[in-house]
Image (cartoon, rainbow, N blue to C red; front, side, top):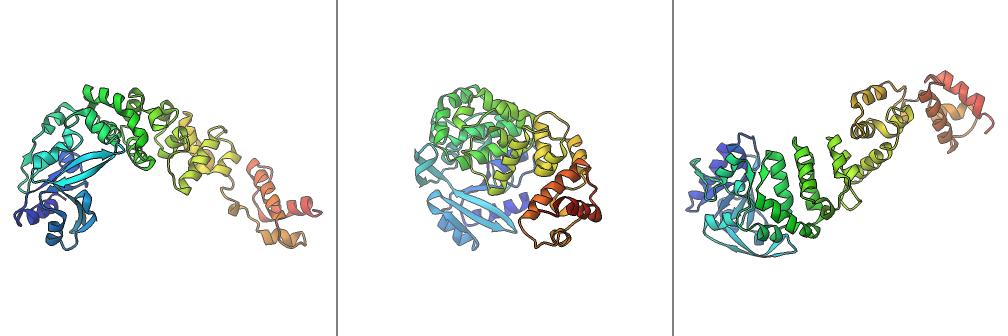
Length: 364
């Protein structure tokens, strides 16, 4: 990764421009963390970058960003810029291209994300980011209130970095977050969920959850019962607890959330509950309730059937035994068979099940 990244820098600088690796990759490499998050900053404009890289794409020219895929690695390359007059506490209203690395770094969020590397692997640290890495602290570049009111998503990014890296938040950052957290309501639920997902799926997620509580962010984020989240490492389990119905989810995720919420009120060792809602929802719910997920899995694996298709008799067999055409009545019979097989009243055997159907449903 580094070798290819340096080659990209060399391709830009060979044309007379300045170019540096910046942000996450440099930060993580200094911490000994493997990273594939490579960003490059340069004084070359998007149009000039397109002339250097035939494969370059400009998703948003007004943002000053170009994406380049080189040797199967995707790079985002941004032109040195100055951002002016943020709109809705999130996006800059105006962007000006500039020719100063330092001024470009001053627009960034945290000092630990301003450390750069040139094509010769020299570290350029103009804003004392390495000091803050050593001190394990998250500090804002410039004025905290200005940065958080300009882009309120930085509040969640601060929590995310503190969580991921197990760093502390600087006291001025903490105070400023509490003053500016109201602006989180202006950020889209999609962007807030992206940051919260990263916090909740971190190996240090309990640190992040505690920060959300200690910083009093839950009301502004419109999330509930965050203190209960510490009992589960399941992302959907966390959202099942805290979501008020305002965050976006796919249809599959919505189904998972519904199942988890339902079985939270049920006995997760009950055969019919396990069968009806599946192992995942029951296991997550058990974890939230402090129960053994291994025991839930064991109970699930011992079920005589796991889905209706496991029942050893087909609908046409039942209809034939009853001398009837297939119809909606078969669903009622199958529901009865499911209950009796799961309770142990009936053995899941074709002859046994057909005899039961003849004895009990011949007249319906």
